[in-house]
Image (cartoon, rainbow, N blue to C red):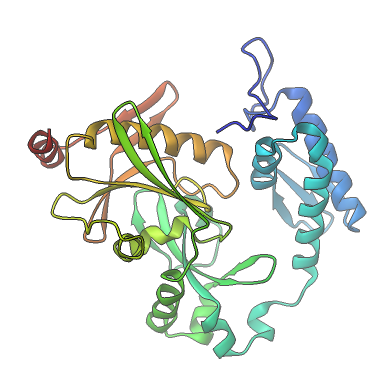
Length: 307
């Protein structure tokens, strides 16, 4: 998913250990621009490999803005604009009062969404209510704000819940998430539907995948289910099993998921899952030397039947 303006470094160039799509010199320029952006917004920070820390100990990750710089077609000339806009937005959001203190319960419910995030991101977060829906992927609640989102912590759920009511509202809003693009990727015998959008919750639409297919006028998944990937927050990709294109489509999805997860802002999961009636089974394992696809006896039987 490298953008035309930002080709990956040649094999002979040293790559940054944290952001492999940058050379070491590009990464140094990027981190310095981020530091300058925070300073311009009134916050002095110290830059580390994948985050910055201010004088009060607050930590701000760099993964999303790094991916945004990498994927911009204008190349390095756009990085100052991107980092300045990003840091200004972060500082304003950090200094603003909490939406859980300023919004009414009705406003919160109207802006609440179920969201998928990497389970690893929740290790230091007070969100015991979170539910792991698939290996490495968990479901939380977010409130959508004009320039950002805010995660419900346990105390917010206790204050505005019950959880079941909040989740019900989050699912209603998730079913209405707009998709700005619906593309069909046909490659090496595979056929994959790709949904893209500006919404932070496009990938999270995986939670209501059956409703998504109905909205798009696509065939209702039968007993064979759907191969699906949610690489980053703005993309959902899937293949409805029904014919011999299933195996090549699984291969296409595996490569697509890994590339999107590595390169795009808001990574969710690098894996492909087998969806059946809302349950998810992980099919891929991403290893240093490549992607391994694990197909169990049940799916093997299905693929043999389709093939």
